[in-house]
Image (tube, rainbow, N blue to C red):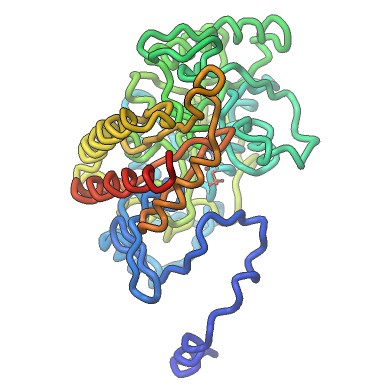
Length: 441
Ligand SMILES: Cc1ncc(COP(=O)(O)O)c(C=O)c1O
């Protein structure tokens, strides 16, 4: 048994070399952290970093929010594991009920699992079993995770799938309306001329019968693939097409959900009601929890024991999710997300006017991005991953943590916690301005 003395000695021992972590965890920052508070990560030496990665869109309530931390501590001292096939527990029952009422329409029933990819798997299995159809359509630039089925759906970047063929079949990829990169020249999404609908029709005539398609999965705002906000008519029209063919519309809201875009779920921006919503990341402020929300009549078609898992809907994670939802409501985080997002977009647009290497500034709520190009080269939209990396590094030198995204890794994405303040956003914009100069962007 480890007593307190042994533990104190252990924490005084130098940390193991970082090479104990395998290289498959492609490294973004070489940073050891001790703790986090709100928008900040703090090193053992007390250096503070403004964390606008949110651990890839997870810590929506900020690091170690006191209400969430207290709920976790209280639950952990009562019960750590109450397996879902074997028992019911209060945190789980309350969360299932609350999730079912999170979105208008429905009625909805939730299913809980552990990771985003696992929830994507659940969504695909449910769409197949509920429709009795085999095929799934996903979109170019989409990212859905790293398990077999999720990899087969993913088309954001070849590194996520290229070394792992063969992948599960009966998956087809449709053309995404990516207005900035439309063939022949970019255009404003509000006057979209992308031919995605013609391309989808072609897919139905060349590759797969629509009545063999169980589901179409889409990220309402593309994440990993480059923070691409769709043109306003896209999701409503996709909803019409899927209804017309009896195809389930699956919204992968793993990154966009739980307030990230300024609505609880991003589909609400367009008044679109999908059949299945995939949830993870921000749902429990950092504890591993994921799930799907499906219309109740669809969820009823998932035969008992045909899906599940040992850890899904862990009781401590459920308590964290309940507290996360409290914080989103009590602290009016949707409103803050919209305001801070607008602040970011106008700040970045001002910087774009001075830096022609910023080809596009876009975002929805606190999913904000700058796409970097080589000005004066080709048609002016040639991706510039080198400058993107330099900007990210120059921000990090100034203690602002940002991630990249995009097929060509030429997008800097900004994912602050939804609790971030006006002053913090101003600070971040000042650092980005300095970093653009330092990176000769
Ligand atoms: C839209 C989307 N779907 C699915 C996933 C996979 O989630 P996880 O990494 O928790 O498996 C991610 C992760 O980045 C994501 O952004």
